[in-house]
Image (cartoon, rainbow, N blue to C red; front, side, top):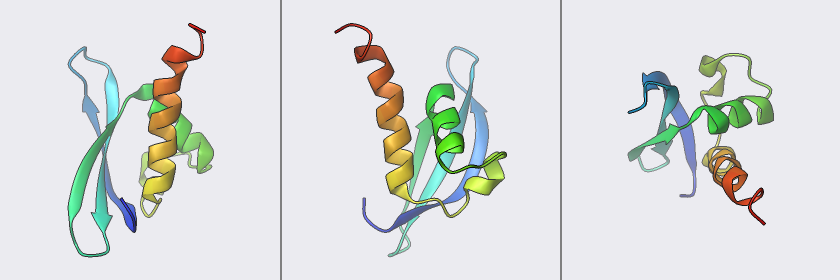
Length: 81
């Protein structure tokens, strides 16, 4: 996913009732993708971008979203090794 940036951010409910962040990625060619971040990934993304509100994530690159998703996933495997 090259050249994609966050263009929209919404807070939504997950199937378990927990809050999640739903970000819209917009590509250079105009294409769009929705990506859901669980609470851990959302907090990681906010911290890594020094954002204090979800609206401040507008313009953040896909690379930082990807890294937050990886960090969220890795939290499950780091403790089992």
